[in-house]
Image 1: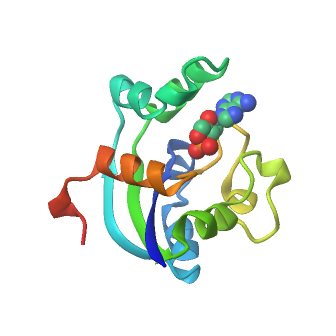
Image 2: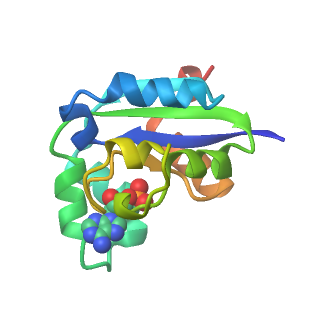
Length: 138
Ligand code: CMP
């Protein structure tokens, strides 16, 4: 069925000028952009968005990284969106990411890995609603 996932182009990729290249790969991958904004997470936003990781040793580093500059947040629509988008972005660690994936091309490390992709339909809905009001989704 056609469904939705949520993505962010993270501060490392924005800083390096990769927004256009990543959006192009998203388009070429057959995803329709149904919501999109250029924004910056506050510390509170990042701590809430990544609450599930708060006991992890990298949590402080993750919040620091995700708030250090602007991001692009978007909701994407496609048949089988969550799984297909995770295939398109590749493994969390770019050293393990397959050829032809966004992280293989644009990520620098396991932490600074260029893009986010929701890991389930349920989280896609929660994460999309975190960033977008209903009237911003088309
Ligand atoms: P993502 O999967 O989008 O969401 C959780 C993020 O935590 C992940 O991307 C990385 O940015 C970060 N992360 C995961 N594992 C590590 C790690 N070992 N060290 C630092 N950051 C990590």
